[in-house]
Length: 293
Image (cartoon, rainbow, N blue to C red; front, side, top):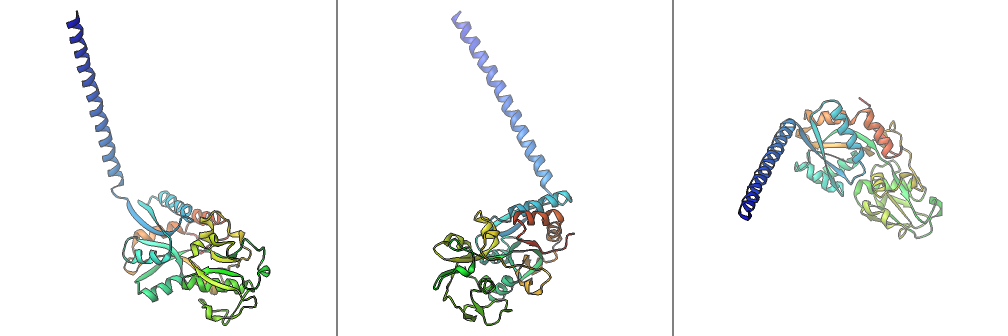
């Protein structure tokens, strides 16, 4: 009896092992088959790598992807975030990304002049406010003599920040219409403000050590704050030619400016759902700078 029971157990074990092996084989076949089908479905999908600054525009690019899908375009957007536009143009020039959406016309013009990049504009995105923020004061007139104010340390945004301070009546500039004024162009500083250039991404974190700071809307949104927290907001009219330098843009290399895949992405960007998303994400502070197609 003991011998038969032992043999029976061995036979049952063999049957169970065989059944388990069959299940594993079937599962492997299913996984491999699924993988093959996925590869077949995605074989004609074009992946486009887009350089961006931070994560503030993630929802906007999700809306672009949804519009591409709705239009039946076989294009997949992959975002590659950078901390500063200094690196994103270099990455675009080196083809590490296909194009970028990380700067305005004034920044591109200055960067191309400095680094001799062969870059071209594919289309406009939106105009983003640059405003004055403070945790000490509720309005610019409350600034005290000798207060420190932080502004961006790159040339074009530094000049734009000086214009914001001039608009807030804190300083006077030699030529108020100049696109990129320099610190030496400050001809009137009645409160003897100490204007210091720092990384724009970190300006909000410097408050209240600094009495005030001027920075871009995307860094404000990334920091979990509203652009309407500003103590001085500069109004932007898209019809005013003076504002064109500050319209944000999509940029690629000159040899790819007629790329049909990139053109399809720009067309999707210039859609009503994307325009509505821009307004929603930035709570009306950023204005779409394109005609809806």
